Length: 86
Image 1 (tube, rainbow, N blue to C red):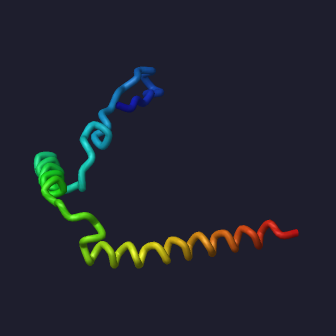
Image 2 (image 1 turned 90 degrees about the vertical axis):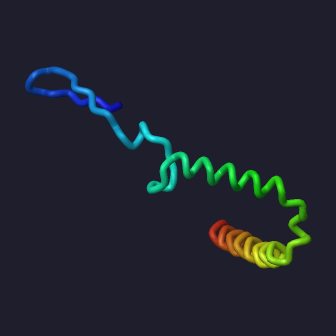
């Protein structure tokens, strides 16, 4: 709730802020659908017995992400060292 002061009458009027009173979801889906999607995802995760290294697509993803993350760290460190030099 937010409040505003009316300068003419000196009264304080309260207005309801609709964005903070509603629960956050993707903006279009009702809350029941969002909750059922979360429950479905939990069920799928529990049923999955394979480890990440046994899945070819995840191995490929992680092999691509590691050099990219290291590259960002290297360039960030190089930039920082150039700014500190006397």
